[in-house]
Image (cartoon, rainbow, N blue to C red; front, side, top):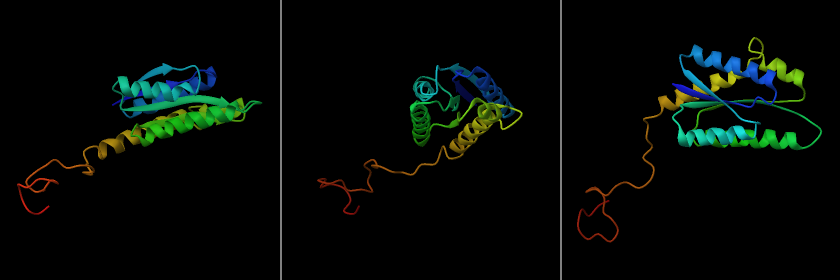
Length: 165
């Protein structure tokens, strides 16, 4: 199992704590990890999307920190990054979201501490659980859509073949 950790080191001390917790969780599960850095939280979903199209990772961990400032930029970054990650998850990607959204640096430090709230480890655990769930149900098919033509079906306009559908 291979997991990509995408981290924004904008707040380097916070990112380091998140990263330490995530790596430890992934290693404890016997999985491998790779890390890429993005300038900010808004670029993290894009990096994951690019990776999904061009690489072979089983899951992703998004790590970063957004601290409320004096403008509405905080809401934009929080909402857009979270929404993008959620939409990719609904499309089947296994993503653990560890992008902290906090009022101040002190709140972030408590949450990022791998010996404290360990939100980086929690995000990695979420990704690992989603990977396991995806593998558990990976071979189940719902048979939704068009079925190929066979002798059991009469196609519209077809005068030959069985008389029942």
